[in-house]
Amino acid sequence: MKKITTIYLLAFLMVLSTVSQVYSKGRKPPEPVDTSIESRIASHFNLEKSLVISIKNMGYIDEDIIRILLIHVTSEIPVLQITKLHKQGTKWEDITNRYEIDADVFNKETINILIYLGMIEKTEPTEDNVINDILTPSSEQ
Image 1 (tube, helix red, strand yellow):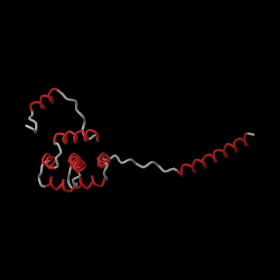
Image 2 (image 1 turned 180 degrees about the vertical axis):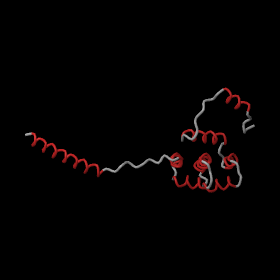
Image 3 (image 1 turned 45 degrees about the vertical axis):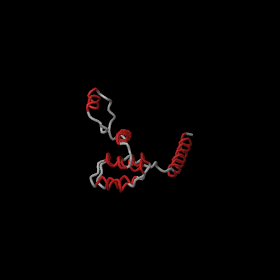
Image 4 (image 1 turned 135 degrees about the horizontal axis):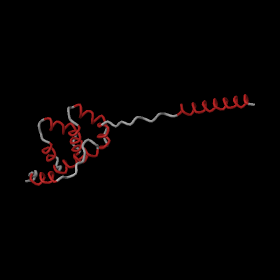
């Protein structure tokens, strides 16, 4: 009786292993998620990662890539035109003024995107920061 039970148990285990092998071969492993900074920036602006990489290959740092793309999506100016102006020495503030983008809103939005993408940490206002903001003349004066 023990021998028959053992044989049935082995047969049952063999069937189980065969079934599980058949099912496991039919499933695809999950695709790896691209969490690179280039992918996160592209995703945020709903653009292709290749565009972000091409801007990076021009020598721009991530913060400047965000500025370029922010101007691009806000004003619909081609990326190459924006990078050309900046490479010629035009400051970001002058570029935003040229395309009628409020410089203060542009700077705040750039910081918000950097925080959202986890590239910088949000800092709470301290007494020193508030005093510096009050004593530092704004660009409007």
